[in-house]
Image (cartoon, rainbow, N blue to C red):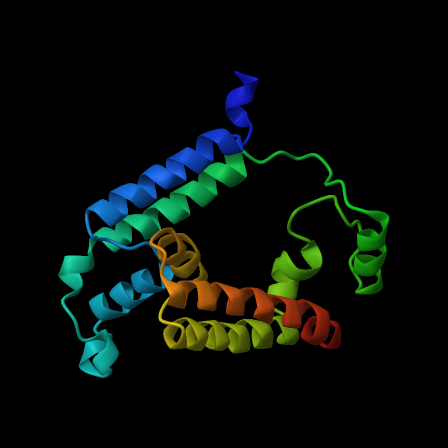
Length: 185
């Protein structure tokens, strides 16, 4: 019974993800979270003011199942599948993170210095959320989709633009963590 409360191993989740992708491609659907946001905005009436949101959102209602699944999956993962053991990190990583101001490195996946309510509701936290949200929103629109859409759907259907976008996502992440993040924190 205790094994059920552990995260599923890769040899279970990998084939399940492949099966979901096959079914989506078979039925002519794509996977991505940014399209769900577009559907939600269209339902809320954004199409009255912005042309991008003016489309038949009722044909995209199935996208809302993805949103519900992400919320429900996150809840299940957090409360039933989280493994509360310490994370084994190299000494160099621990030293680098301590230099950035992180305490108790490796004791949780989400450091409280970034993911606590105090951090979120600080002036710095709100600015990071607003600016970061704008940049992510702009980036997903400019790239024609989000990381999950390009990396999962686009790459599995062998689309060159998705490969270029995924390479850009990784380069952007490297630039952020090595050049911009040290300045912010």
